Every structure is written in structure tokens, then in C-alpha cells.
Image (cartoon, rainbow, N blue to C red):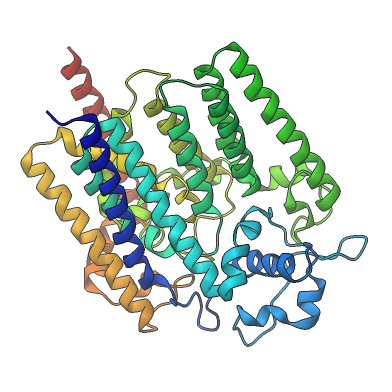
Length: 460
């Protein structure tokens, strides 16, 4: 019978091993070009230019960086860096993004510029998966199965690429997992309340888009806490929310940084939200986010396919951590479906899901525990195939065959191209797209029904 100390040591060893292995593998994503003309693109330069302004000038005003072209140290395109926002009434030029990531990257940028920032995100990503492994292993009590599930998800193409991309999804995911580890503690005292309030605050400062996830964590915290602790948590989060709203109103002239974006410049917050949210014309993404022929994350890593229906295996009681993880994943999928402007570029597939991607290792582990040996062999084969696709992507990117943010799906590897016919391409609603869409949607529903039935049968 293993001792508590022995189990703890094995858990730590598994987490450290996972961290080292993933960090080593992620080194291969450094240097992959985003476009033909630049190493980074999309929102990445604007997070970095803000960090540069914080280091050089101690403020968020980007006028000096544009005037001095100091951004050239990390933005290597032939053309000057474009502007995402117009000048404020007082002349300031601000990036239309929350400053959390830019502040977080100060150490890396100060030490080694773009490379330093990429290494910092890489370490954060490896730490995120290592801590998520701790959470999953503690919940499943299956250290080996949890480790294998985590390595399968950690080596998916989406995780590999975003391990060094300059976006807030990974640090936000780290806040999320740390909050889950706090919430699963047997006791929920005042130190836990303070820790949760701090993590939710940090999560929101990484991006307004994470406020809904933070609210869900707070709701669970209130339900877990005693009366006094619950009141304290609400009070701390209320104060944090007031500071957040005040600072944004003073700095950006709105409750979100999007108020200064050239697309929404001067628009009230309600109008910005209305422009982001759409229902009917984005509903297909509930399937497309996973199996789109170009941008579906399970298209790049089929080992993720069982994780979606297997989410029904997590909750044991409606108030436990398993239920919270399901709620967080579902909420993020709904945001990626109905709120995110696009699921296609100007970034690699899966950006909007990267924050909750590590959590999918839990349902994957639960699924692996319940299937027979042959099923585990198939699942292992899917994991190997997914890792080989990631390797093919790394090689194609390093050779200049594809550009990570533009056309990664154009790589010539037959390993990736041959299964294309199985997946719908939502760029055009052809007969093939509609048939494939219906087939994948029905297959998911049937899988969910079978898993629910098997679970209830096991209980009875």
C-alpha cells in the first residue's frame, strides 16, 4: 500500500518530468515564422510594444515607440508596424488590449527582447500543463493515465504553437488552473479566499474576455466557502471590479480597451459587446472549432476527439471540481462560438480554446480509464498520430513551407493531408461540408448518450 508521502513524491516527479519534457519539445516552436514577412503578427506586436513602453518610458503611451521605430527590435517586417488604435483626445496612443500580459512579459523582454518573451511564455506553458497534471492526477487517482493524457494534449499542435506565441491565453490558463487547485482544497479559509480573489483579478487583467470565467470561479468559491468567507470573497472581488472599471474608464474611455480600437473607436461598451456577439451565423462553430478541415483543433490532434463527449464523465456531484471544469470548458466554447469575431486566422487554430485546452486531459484520462485494452490501444495510436502531426508542422514551419498564422494547413505532409476528406471545410457550405457537419455533430451526440448510459449503468 503506497504511503501518502510516496504518492506525493510520485506526483511531484510526474509533474517535474512533464514540465521538462514539454519545455524541451516547445523549444522547436521558437523561430517559426508567423507570416512570410514577419516572425510575429496579429496582436503579438502590440503586447510587446506596450511592454517596451513600460520598460523604456514607464507608461502605456506608444507614441515614442512609433516615433523612434524602437519596435524594430522585435518586429522584422519590411513595412512599419501598423496601428490598431487612433490617438486619444490628449494625444496618447494606446494598444487596444488589457495590459496584464504586457506587464507579465516585462522580465522576459527586459532580458532578451522577443526571444526572452517567447521563453517566458514557453516556461509558463510547461508549468501550466504540469500543474494541470497535478489537478487531474489528484482527481482521478490514476497518476500514469493522467500523465499520458496530459502529454497527449500537451503535444497537440495547438499547445505546441501557443507555447511561444505572445498571447494571454496561456497565462490566463495558469490563473485558471491555480484557482481550481485552490478551490479543490478540503478547507476554504481566508487565505484561500484571498488567493482566489487575486487569481480572478489577474485573470481579468489578462483580458476582459476572461471576466466570465472569473465570475464562474467566484460563484463556485462562494458556494464552497462559509458565510463569512463568502462575504469576504464577494467584497474583495467587488473592490477589484470597481478598480478595474475605474481604471479602464480613465485610461481607455470605456469599460474595455476595445474602446480605442480603430474598429470600435469612440463606441460605447454596449455597442462593442453587441458587435462581438452573434448567434445564428456562428452556431456551426460548436462543431467547427473541433473538426473544421483547416482550423479545428481535433483535426490537428484527433486524440482530443474523445475528450469532448467524455466531459460528461467528470461531475460526481453538481458542486464538485469536476462540474466546475465542465462549466469552464463549456463557457469558453460558447465564448469562442458566439463572442469571438472569428475562429479562422490571423492566428494558428485553437487560440480561443487554448485557455481551457489543458483541462481536456481530465476527461481524456477518465475516458481511458473506462475503455477496454483495445480501446486504449486505439487511443494511444491517436495520441501518437497527433504528436506526429505536430512534428510534421514543426518541420514544415522550420523549412519555410508554411507560415504559422497564415497557411499551416497547406503543409505537404501526407500524414496530415490524407484524412482531409473526413472533415468539413466551413469556408464553403458544399454538400460535403453539410454531410460532414451533420455526421460529426450526430457522432458527438451519440457518444455523449452512450457515455451517460454507461455511467448510469455502472452506478446501478
